[in-house]
Image 1: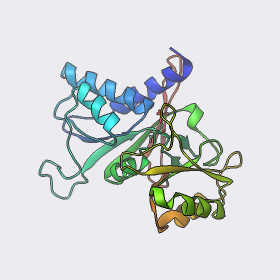
Image 2: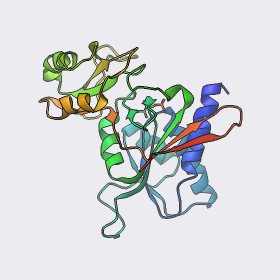
Image 3: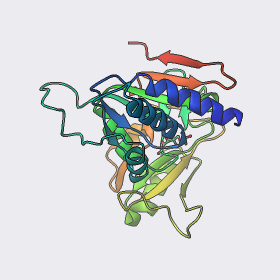
Image 4: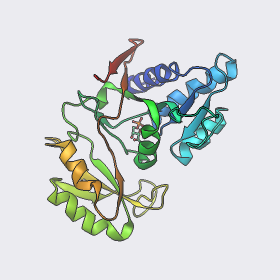
Length: 243
Ligand code: 5RP
């Protein structure tokens, strides 16, 4: 197994180990979260874990969860526990994590649903490997912005005015033309590399009420924990957000 695969597996398994009997769990999207889902499936099938339900953030995750035998539910079903947050825990990957646990997500174009699910979780746990750790968000990964197709041009110009070096329409790897999200929309990638975002909060603010924008991949002050997997059986580094 490659070093990166080992690290993702370590992070995924550490994430799955946080799940306890009866929990409602947000299920993120991506290759690292897939490792967590497989580990969760194993724990459920062995009987070590019971009465767990998951809320998937994409059709891909939904398919994998079903294949792993993880029972699925929605954000509206909390098993009659009034006043509780709908989800005890959400597990998800990231494209970048900064020292304050702010995150860029959306490498898989699933960030809009991932943010809805993260906002409903008492604990939002990011599963990563060391390649995702950066000093400043945007050093390597672009900030994905989900847009209405007819607004792509105006929003791209707005992103560049707001400081992006370039805003590029994301196109498919095995399909001609734009990547179409699970909502039927497009994704603009706002690039800030190599310096990164001078002020991630200001950029998020500039997108907050922009017509045609559904949501973006900046998850600021949202993650409660980050599990950074290491290779060669060196375990996992657990970073927690300071209150
Ligand atoms: C999908 C995401 C993913 O969680 C993020 O891109 C990380 O993916 P991976 O674990 O495959 O590196 O945000 O929209």
